[in-house]
Image 1 (tube, rainbow, N blue to C red):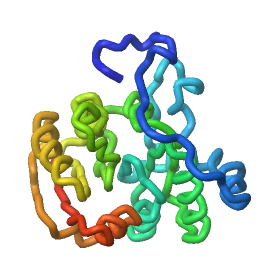
Image 2 (image 1 turned 135 degrees about the horizontal axis):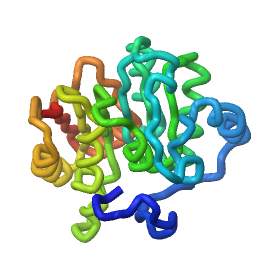
Image 3 (image 1 turned 45 degrees about the horizontal axis):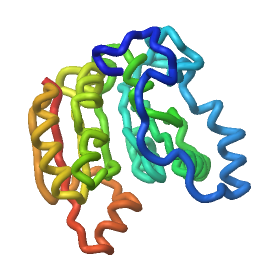
Image 4 (image 1 turned 60 degrees about the horizontal axis):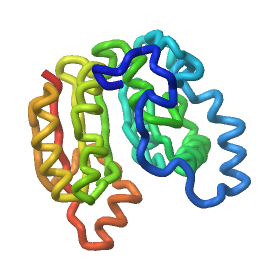
Length: 236
């Protein structure tokens, strides 16, 4: 939510969302994942319909204890998210993704992997920013976000104050924020905007993190001759 948006604003006037919510027709199995699993994995009280007054969530209730809370912003097909959950079973990882097909893909991967430390918000991450308590997240990931390549659309990118200020609010001091992209201009804007929101640049280059899991979007970039770039920031 932007700083000048009242809490009681009507939903239609609340804020804009840009991007796809639906893609190809879902397979029957994917429809089953959505019908059977999403209700269990979706944190309650995130959507404006469920929580119009935007009461804060209790992070300890998401996973039943006070484990470290991580956040993946736009998880795509979910492969990185499932990998991190399996590698770090002691954390709780929330993923946000408005693209229904990506949510269905993730739910299938969760079933096959058998991981239990995941929560899934099938919508705009700003919904979650509204209700997470301040300094409640210890690590956040932004992997291959929508590049919005046209100059007039750059304001729609995640690395803008509208998204970064709320992210900074929910991240704890010292929390890590990772960004992976293959778009040079996205790297430029990330370097410029993220420090302004309250972050220090820790690393910046072509070498991925030790626990990195290459996503389908990265593999597509490599096939098409684009070079991945990895940036790490730390919250003041």
